[in-house]
Image (cartoon, rainbow, N blue to C red; front, side):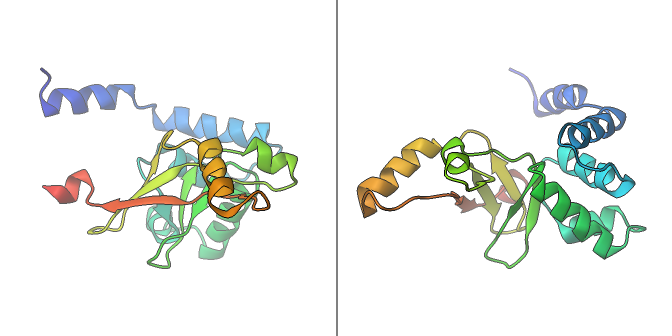
Length: 170
């Protein structure tokens, strides 16, 4: 059985370097046909490298020389391009995470649903983490139809589990 330090050392080895993350950010911007700017590359790279969703303030603390409006514009651009998604929270703070899943059914109906996965929010430190592959969007859409009737169409799914993160639980 591996000790906690062995596991974290293995995890560190698997993490891409900051140069690789910057290159990936630039590639994703190019692939999305988004004009490449220094701010967009830096912000997307920060989101790609983060292990949790980041607030505007988290990013502002990281990029102290970046104007707050420039940061908001970069986040809006990344969200609009589908390279990041915006997570609304009950503490009235939006958080951002890299990547955006698209619902095929929503796109077919002319709606660009941007994230079809769940989140975990720590009630002690307020950090938000994306949950990979939790729940099947088609199953949830089916539950909507069964509960409310055939005329209802869901376009975005927001699912949040609240509790304590690993750091706060100890």
